[in-house]
Image (cartoon, rainbow, N blue to C red; front, side, top):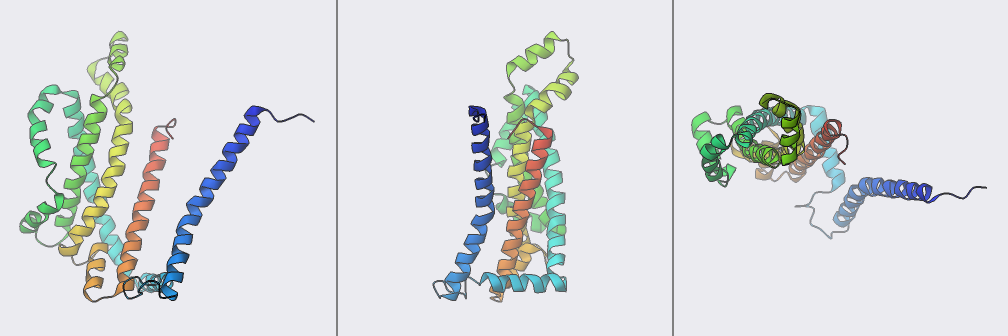
Length: 265
């Protein structure tokens, strides 16, 4: 009987490690929920502030069946997707221009660098003055936050392209437009995708803040209004939905990254 080779043993070890990681990935949130439930039922934690997961699940189901949760979720998703698309497209476009052109970068970088450190929540009162309470305020706040993150990620990706890329392109006689389209943008894609993932986290953060005071429907409004009437289970339903949104969008962006950059893990 042939003895297993070193490569076979290594492959088996990697496969076992992968299964262990998948098991931990699935088991850790379940164990946390069970520990939370047990702590609540044994009065280790105060259920007035930390509702039981079973009660939160019951409230989640009731809100889902009544359609209340879907209306809040639909409103928030619309604002997130619109704000994210506007901010990411504008940020990536301007980031590319500033990355490729030293003249444009010299003219715009001081302005962008001065505006970027301003907390985006500080702009919310101005947006409320301009647009009032409603959809436009929430979408604008998300777009502003996403814009700056995506701009800097894209610009850095373009600027930090290896110089050898330009030399090889010049050696093959590529025009500037060919270099940008065929070489530079694919080369900067990892930074652009990283910016998208960071931007989505910013979008989720800002949509909640905007919906606290700027709307009358949405997950942020659900959390805020539940806090006002001390409906703890409803408040946690909103927090759970936000966590699921963050988890799902992160998986989606990672899958997109694997398709666009197959060699990247």
